[in-house]
Length: 114
Ligand code: 5GP
Ligand code: ZN
Image 1 (tube, rainbow, N blue to C red):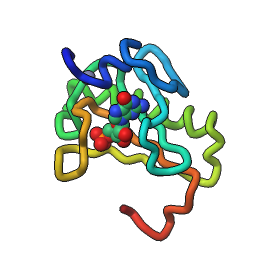
Image 2 (cartoon, helix red, strand yellow):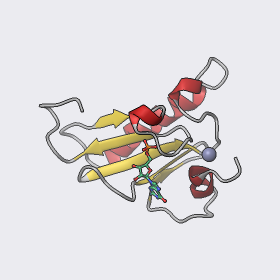
Image 3 (spheres, helix red, strand yellow):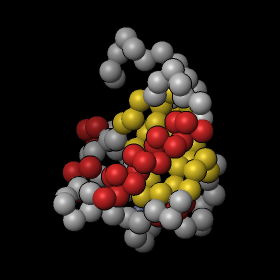
Image 4 (cartoon, helix red, strand yellow):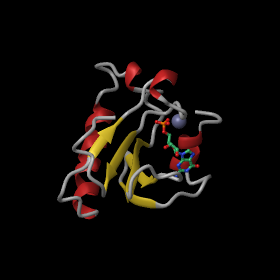
């Protein structure tokens, strides 16, 4: 999609610190980490702006992302646990309207959900 930040990162037009890539999915470190480990997982294609646009027609990209999340967690050694977040809409804090999942880890989050 034109003028989409994460489409440009997926295309390599904007550099990123990649941690995983396959034909459908890219994972890279968040530029403003909110935890010691903060990785973004995106479908390379602009399949949806957010979780609010997931349908039977495009939900396969969600499965691809979660397959990548498991691989990233293994590769990053996140044995103690990790959290996956997706923000949908302004009130949730979404700032980039290209479906993405945050992997957060490296600190104890067990006492709070948000
Ligand atoms: P959202 O707020 O939409 O759920 O998440 C967007 C995330 O993208 C934020 O955590 C923000 O720090 C990250 N971000 C914004 N611009 C860039 C960038 O140019 N590169 C990287 N690696 N992350 C970015
Ligand atoms: Zn996009």
